[in-house]
Amino acid sequence: MATDVRDVLASQIEYVNKNIQHMYEEGSQVCDLVLQNLPAHTINRRLGRLIVQQYRGGNWGKMSANGTGNYGQGTGNKQYELKFGAFYAKRNFRFNDEVRDTTQGNPQAVVDIVAEQIGGAMADCLIDDDVAFHQSGTGVISSPTSLPAATGAGTASTTITFAGATDYWGISMFRQGMCIEFWSQDLTTKRTTYADATLPLIIEDIDYANKAIKLNQAVTINPAGSQDVAVIPDMDAYGPSTLTIGSSTWPDNTVAGGLSGDTFRHGMDYALSVNTSDYYLGQLKSSKLQLLSNRVNASTASLSWSHGRQLDDQILTRSSDDKPDHIGLASLAQVKAIEDLGVNLTEYRLQGGGLQTPADLIAYDRKYGTPVQYCGKAIYRDKRLKKDRINYLDKTTWFRAQFFERGFLDGGDSGKYLFRGRIPSTARLATWLEFIIRDCFDFVCSSPMRNGYIDSLAVEAAYV
Image (cartoon, rainbow, N blue to C red; front, side, top):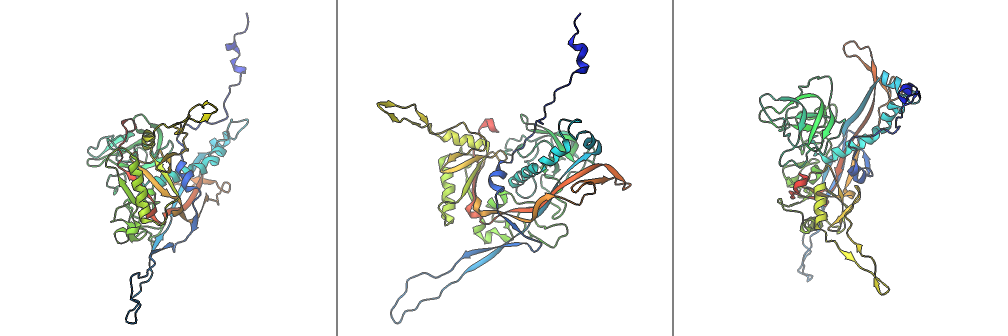
């Protein structure tokens, strides 16, 4: 009898694809478009300053040139200053000795796991930048949770849902493997009741259909009176004890640990705010109206050509430049709305005595990263932007203020960038290692009035 293949399976070698499949969100498009090439200005604890000329002065008017006339009284230059600083942040990775000892590539494993982790670390930092640029500066990265329901002292759960009827942020800021924390809806109280307080809260998976995240452990949130919000971890490491933005004291360089006043890096919403009661880099906006951005409130109407033209004209009215270097960012829902505005123009060209094949002048088959045109602007899809918004950013007005360039923390005791852990209770060496990337910077916009946004747009039901 011939040998059955099942009798010789022991001698066969299984095939393993050497390309690790990244089954998680890795979007850093806005970072790539806007942030990667920003000029960087190195500062220190003495901070950085922008000198703003409120006006040049000069009294223009009619005069009499006869001997009894005079030239009147002239006026002069008026200036004020904006102060900016930077925020410390880190991204640390951990693996144990056995992982390193058994996955160092051929012949042990098809992939050197430690090398892969180190190799992709900087790319993850760019995604962090993307997330930070889309939050206001409080560290909040979600609207209030919709489930579990607020009750009593709160509910312990590993599944958290963000599906409120008017939640236009949803789960767009989250990605698998991301660490988060939860704070009360009024941004004053951090939730600290975990199933295992020694471990961080990690997003293990994301249910995109139901707008829910799955956590590695249960966290108790949503006590009566609060539908809590998700927040970047350790926002209270230094600075204000509550999550704060638009403070009169930013940047306060008298606090130990880092600059204080505001909580975290100032994203787009900080510069684009039209709230006159906010402070912007040390100046009250109601007393310096040039620091207000531009807003078109659509009042829940569907996007029209008029909205874009109004925003263009607002910026033009307040600025000296008819052609600012704008990049447009639109939520996926609003890119669809832009496409719905288009008329499918067809061009017929004469060829000899007949017509060529018609050419479609408005292309709808767009790859992610390719802009659509709206009111003369290149508009890029932005999957983290709130669904009812379109932002116009003048790239020439943005820069990074930093203490130092992002890099690996060196001085490790197990290789230049590897740090050996210790057991807290005994201080003995642990069987795990970490490597750490750190940076200290902030996003700064030198001229909010050259930027703007359209909000409160209608959102098609399929995108809610």
